[in-house]
Length: 278
Image 1 (tube, one colour):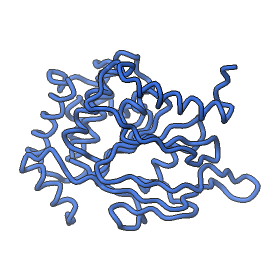
Image 2 (cartoon, one colour):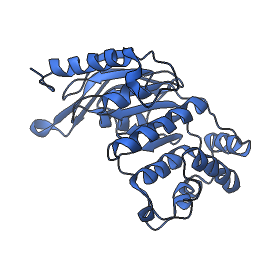
Image 3 (spheres, one colour):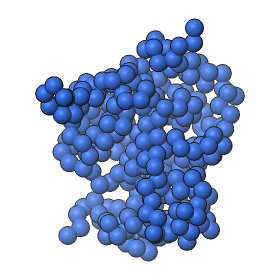
């Protein structure tokens, strides 16, 4: 029998609403260890993680520092070894469903068209089909996908496949969007355009976003705050509030402060021995 969450999402969709209250994330002393005994791998933490409702926060750090692990813990897809996580003040004890997740690999089903990949959310969640299709059409228009609804993934460019993946993550109006290196496989021009499109969607909906990236430009260009992580086991070693006007331009170098933020992150990585410029 559909629960409260199902009915709340259905009501938003039927009303044609494009916004929902972003969920807050509060983590304390989060640690993740994989395995036991001498084979155990301490992957993360301890870290404290706080993301306010409607905030766009990026995690940036070296490969293997636990960024993706953090995202999986927040989604409830992996249990924390130690520490607690609360979503909207409620303890996280299992996987949460009112969330959208985008990975570097689009993970589209090759035998389904673009629109049917997005409408998979309706089949899984039992949501109102007509309302969800209307929302899908709105997202396709905003993401530059109009006309691609009936193409299969193999008929789409890499950028278009990732746009479909973003539409699928957002179509059910989740309160939280988790993105793990979503632009990592795209060329620079496509990354810049999708970065802009994502920012415009976020400005409209103000969903809570936790964005995992290796790109300093993406982190500074999209975020309200950037959390810089150390090497494994990852801890948060710097927190940078990004005070740049929105929407942000394609050429972030127009802002002198962009260079200052970027240099601070580069300097942190250099101090860790990740970058060696001398």
